[in-house]
Structures are given as structure tokens and as C-alpha cells.
Image (cartoon, rainbow, N blue to C red):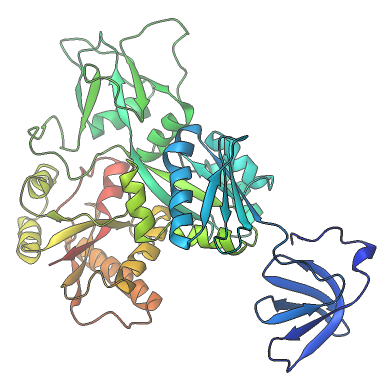
Length: 488
């Protein structure tokens, strides 16, 4: 444990006494560590741990509780430091009632003060690190949190799992803090400006990958851009094989495809359609979400969090923090409603993405049951053929719980609606989609001790109905295996 009161040598040889605040019990021994929350004492009964808020420490070697502020280190991509992290820390300070001051010496350091006595309570320091180096900082115990533009690679996941003694997708170890849209740009000499998601997967997944045939021309596809963003795109498309060689430096190729988080110019912007085949939805009927939406991950170091560090972690999944994420220009979990009809194009896009052999009755059932409801943007996704939520959905559970506790759903009819991809039989897909809806509802009921869940919170399984994307790619199948929250 981290100590806040000097050396652990001979100075601690003198015994201390820990006394319950009501005076009913006391224990004496040698204080071995203190982390602002827990006293560790070597007593005649062996090593004991006592909570600081329950006892009073008496003795010459007792620590001064206000001696040192918490040091909270964050490793993050430079693009996220001032645009996301620093404003969130300031929002957290205001929410908790702290005053704060930006460092004059360090550009990415902020100190939180107790407004009553002016004592420094915590110092947040942000280091500019790419995603790989930020994860290394976690493994080397140099940081409390790593904010990454992509998910850890398989090798990084293995190292983190060994280091954390648990899985990375556990909500205590990581969360999706926000999402950002990725944009694709082609070379000016390439006439392709519209491709489908299926074509994009084929371009980047095949060896060699080729652009769609346009004007009797076809080009080899090469993906360029910041390394974290190219990896994020490949993870998003579920292309996990090794990247193909890049063209020689200085050689211009019409097949170059550049990924960026910035909207640079419309002249070479490549629009990616969710529609199956070559069919493109009209411009006024866009998909209900940007297809290239990549998660931003926050990974916590595998060590005990102190008071303010733990409070900051919990704050990030509150509606207030997620509203701040949205205000800062990122995609958040803040509830956003979409009607089944209207300009969102939800129903029309579902028809465009429907497999030819899909049962018409499934689509009809979806429209009949959801007419009058609005869909929230919060979505839970699953591994193929299972009721197991993927890693990105785990932190959605905590946020949904907070919405229930805050009374967001009070007076509303709520329906947990499950969907599947098109793999397997239609009847089997209806059943597994219903099982998934029940699983999410049961998990929320457990988190809430069943209290706020009334008979108005129903479940519905629609199988392959209302697909968000084509089922001809792993990405599309993953998008369609989901549970949504619908309200009216």
C-alpha cells in the first residue's frame, strides 16, 4: 500500500493505539501502512486492517491525515487531454464542491482544494501518451488511468489480464468513456466517394484488397493515418489479421484510404453506407448512427483507489459526466430518443438491410409492437449465439442503473427489446433475442434489488427484425446482436 507519512523504518517502531470513535474498543501495535482509508497494524493478534473513518489513531507515529493530497496520474492521447480529460476533471471538481487551480508550470496538471480550509486534496496530472504507451504505463505502475483511442491488442489484453488478476472487460477495470466518429478520405485521383460497409471490410480484409470497380478502374487499397486510429478502424470492422504492407514512401497511389477523427474536407470524404449491396439510402434518410463510431477506453490500474480517485472513476458514468462528454463534442451515453418513423430513417434503413430470406412477419411484428415507442441510444451487444454481453456493453449497465435510480423512467412504459443477426433459424433467433432482453432486464433488476422494476418494464424478442446493418460481415452481425431500450 502507499504510505503518506515518511519512511517505514525505525521511526514506526513505537506503537500506536487505534480506538473506535465511541471508545468501546482499542487495539495497540506497530503501524505498517496507511492509505488515507485503511490502517494496517501489526498487533498481538497479527496483521489487522481498520477503516480510518471508524477509528482514531493515537501515538507519535500516527499519520497526519491532511498531510498529502492524492496524486492521480492519467496517461492519454494528446488529442484528448484538453478536449476531454481536463474539462471532465473540472466538471468533477465542481460537482464535488472543490475549488481548483491549473498549474502554471505544467500544462496538464490541476489541483483540487478543499474550499473550507484551502488544503490541497488531489493533484491530477495528465501525460501525453499514445494508446500503446499509455497501456505500458498501467503495466509499469506509472499511472492510475490510461485513456486509449483503441481497444488493447490481444498481446496487451494478455499482459493486462495477468497484471490485473482478472479480465479487462470487468467494469471495475475498464469502461468506454465516450465514442468518436472516424472519417475516411480517398485520394483526389480516385473517383470512388461512396462505398458500402461490406465493400470496406472486403477492401481492408482481403489480400490484396481492392477498391470497388469504378469507371473501369480498380485500385489496390492501402490504409493510412495515425496508428491508433487505423487500429481502431480495424477493430471496429473486426479485421484482426496483420496489416498489409504500405506503398513505398513518396509514391502516390489512388488507392490510398486515410482514416481520421477530423472532418477535413468534403472533396475527398468517402461516405460509407449501411445499405446492403450497391443500394444507397437517399441523403435525407441517413442511418440512425454514424457507421464508423469508435469507442474511447479508460483503463484503471490494478490497485486500490483512494477516496478522490474512486469518486472520479464513479463520476465518469453519471448522467452529469456523460452530458459533459456530449457537450465537449464526443458521443456519450446521454439518452437520445429515435422514433421508428420519421427522418431518422430507422424503419427504411431496416428494410434496406433486411436479408431477402427474412420473414416478413418479423418486420411486421417489430413495427406493430414498437409503434408509439421511442428508442434510446443506449444499446447492449452480445457475443454470437450467446447471452454474454461484449466488453463495450458492461459500463452501459452502470449508467442504466443510474438512470433508473435518478427516476428517468418514472411514469414511462419501458421495454427491453432483443434482436439477433440472421445466422441460424428464424425461430431460434426470435428465442435468443428474447433471452437476451430478459438477461439485460434481470441484470438491471439484480443491480437495483428489484425495487424500481414494475410490471410496466416488459421484454420483447424480435429476432432478425429491424437490422441496423447487413449481416454479410462480422461487423454487421455484431451490430445486429443487441438489446435496446424503448420508452413511451
